[in-house]
Length: 354
Ligand SMILES: NC(=O)c1ccc[n+]([C@@H]2O[C@H](COP(=O)([O-])OP(=O)(O)OC[C@H]3O[C@@H](n4cnc5c(N)ncnc54)[C@H](O)[C@@H]3O)[C@@H](O)[C@H]2O)c1
Ligand SMILES: O=P(O)(O)OC[C@H](O)CO
Image (tube, rainbow, N blue to C red; front, side, top):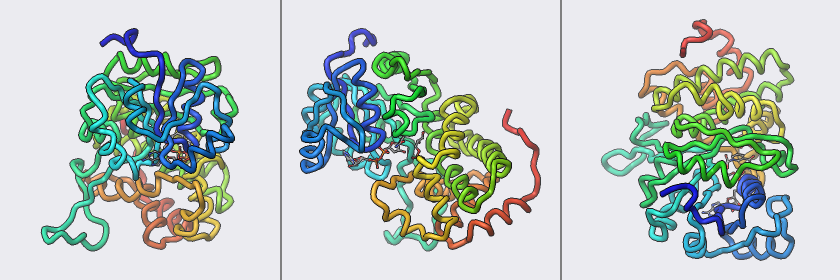
């Protein structure tokens, strides 16, 4: 297959949340778009108002609630929903897909198959995970569907800034040159640059792992700390992301680019980030369940912190920020206690990953 042979007629997007809608509008500069909305009531409302997740839809975006239509009319499909629903979606999608389809996801989370004891019971406490329990979204797509042309998009892309057509850029990653070319062709516009990277696992893990650090950045701001503290967190957080990423099969390179340091800086700096917001509100004294009950607060980092904490022991990694974020989120450790712990953590060399 050559990228020039790819159907230009309709490109599909699954998920009409903040990011799915922003990507649909960006695609609409270059092609007509079929946007799949799961609930009929939401689809009717979007159709009536032409507003989705607070964003005005381009006129060439068509709404559908029929997955079969999406796979029938679209060769290229962008799944953009929270990771917790990805496996279920892909199972539903799988019988409707074939080798001609290309899936390019924008999901910054992981799929976890939590281990059970031989009697089927869940183990007490957080079980230790190994790599076979955890899949990136591209690995999940490959495992659950017949599709073998897979890509991912990641980078500093706060949806509400994209919705204002502010200048921004994304990394389009795939092992397949054809897939990266397609992503570039459909997404590139005057105010939106598309860079490429062939280390897809690395690019995916950048988007996944930065969310834990962004929760930490929100914690620091919520306690009133300033930029020195945040720079310390971002730089040590990046080192931690790289060590975890390398252990999980990534190269260092994407972490030093737009999907890594770029997205880390954007997410750690912005009140628009839901992950940052979780940390900020925790530091201000709210409980995690209070925060997660807020409508529209998709914070992938909360679940990722649990997953990565489960993997750290397996890899015998030093990952004190992830460890502390896990304890703050799930074990009742206060943000201040976590900071005290990190400030006493035995020193290591500054840069030990290149
Ligand atoms: N919002 C951002 O700024 C942003 C930027 C980059 C990446 N992301 C990532 O994109 C993913 C989605 O985030 P979001 O901000 O769009 O979330 P959101 O909470 O704004 O919206 C999620 C949408 O997905 C829909 N959905 C859930 N399961 C579905 C299914 N099975 N089929 C169809 N629709 C389904 C929901 O109805 C909802 O409309 C996350 O992994 C997030 O990390 C978000
Ligand atoms: O709102 P967040 O925290 O999910 O962050 C959004 C994007 O990942 C920023 O690139």
